[in-house]
Length: 346
Image 1 (cartoon, rainbow, N blue to C red):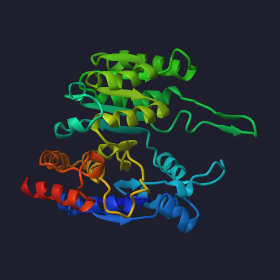
Image 2 (image 1 turned 30 degrees about the horizontal axis):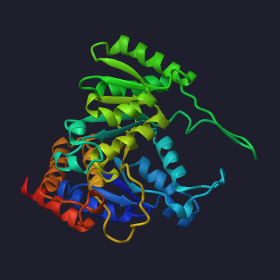
Image 3 (image 1 turned 90 degrees about the vertical axis):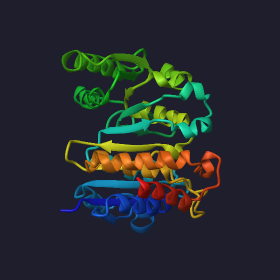
Image 4 (image 1 turned 60 degrees about the vertical axis):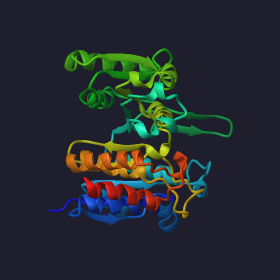
């Protein structure tokens, strides 16, 4: 039976980079079946719901979900009760049981000079940020009055052990567990659970603990020291976006959100919907392509195809491909054609 992929183009530049991604996917895996559904702001406009039941049910029945981008100023609101595209994304992760977000950060040599950091600082950086997705302050109980507001940050031992296992299994050299244990009780539990799991099951893998503020500094001062960064939901959200600058652009970072083995994961670029350039044909599709590679690797078990796509992106950049966010003039179509050309030559 052919693998089934649910595609969620979403909002802003989402439909444009999804179209480009499907051209690449067709080249690499022509047997894969795709099925498009509304999600995010597009679903809000059509159905008044950012995650319609039809979309959720399709995602649950798929082998993987490929998501482009959601959100935009059109749907921004301070009304806590109002639906918004980002709420649909949180709900999708929760309903699919996606607890581990993987964000690789590996600057391509051809783009070393595109980073705001000095070449000697980023050269050789190859890290993986692993962010817990279903707990923490984003999902805790929320209260609001006219003059006060609160967001509860809560984690259980089970949630921490589950994400820590993913990090230890992914590590090649060491795991850096990031918290705020000098202030937060939830972080003290996090540190204790990670330490105990390490001693019981992964003692051969070096473990270090670091505070989130010092880690934020070290990410731009000496990024190559990191292998796997393990952290909770909000810290991971912030640190992974900071790490994007090592690659030179948010337009270069893919991600995978995974749950239990056998369940469908969600694969998406880290960047947003960029409504300011939507419809102009100039969006950088490379992070979307790299997300397709992660889907092929982690979602479909097709390592050879994933490696071929990663390599094609690298070689296109080495050949001079530059979209506007990378200081060039290449359009979305031109970037896609360049990657397809290198796939055909492989």
